Length: 206
Image (cartoon, rainbow, N blue to C red):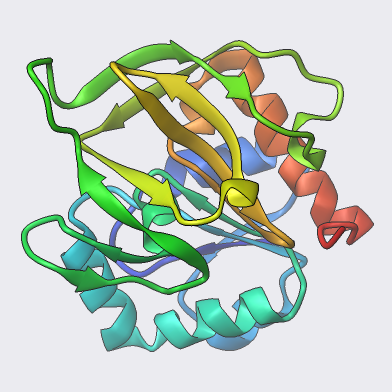
């Protein structure tokens, strides 16, 4: 069973349906016990970083998510959910994140269109279980802020939007995708499927 963590912000329905299409049982839940018993967990997110962290703290799901990550079972942050994995964001002030991955989230700066919206090509930077059997291709992005991992080893894939932009991150059993895999056609669903396979194999920690 895959827990979709419900803290009041996120594309819960589309993520849940994508998980089910791939043959897994999905539970959209805010219940700590149900989350901790899940074989894998997904932290989705749409909206502002500060609001999301406030919701997580108010519900106690910030600590549940951290404890889940420490369990060794696979955890995936999607879009804003990926950004929440980092130490902090500068979106509308300074806001502390979950601190599961060292790094910061910053706004795109430059004389170009923001948000970064549309299909863009992934560049796999290093081997990962998420990429097993896959070739680089295009996925769908919508974001005005981007993560800057402190450790190069946590950066699994980038995309090019006037600079190298973090697209996929991972450390041990904790992963994040800046794009929406459930809205990214065949490649997105295969990336999500490879993550879900980790929940079965429990080989997330390499």
